[in-house]
Image 1 (cartoon, rainbow, N blue to C red):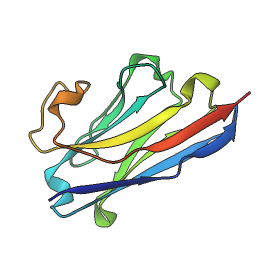
Image 2: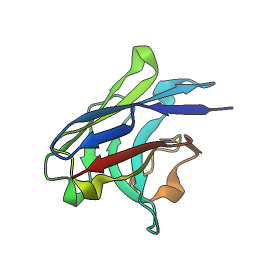
Image 3: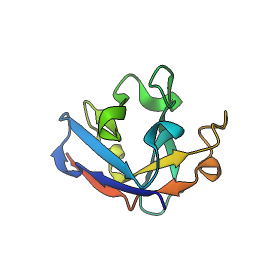
Image 4: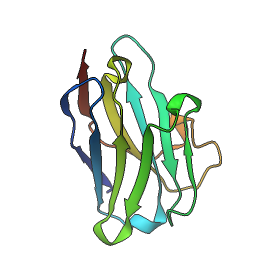
Length: 125
């Protein structure tokens, strides 16, 4: 059984930075492509970033504007999301997700097999 545990969220002032972490356990980490999604109150869950199993390929939401960086450390079974120049509209619960099937539709949450419980990011003005 795959378990994903996120950490690193918190309350940050606008303009600041955060690095979110997500550790996978229970299965072989390199079997999975990984994604980050977020969900703001009253809104649908939206795609933020994707990284393939090796870390060689990454993709971001069109609105990322260079502020998001996804990375992974396969030796630590972990994926990370760094967010720079945080904006109040980045306030959301951030989820990591694991895709065993390697779907090319990496922005569709239905293609992910396992999800973490989420970590809250709150950006104050």
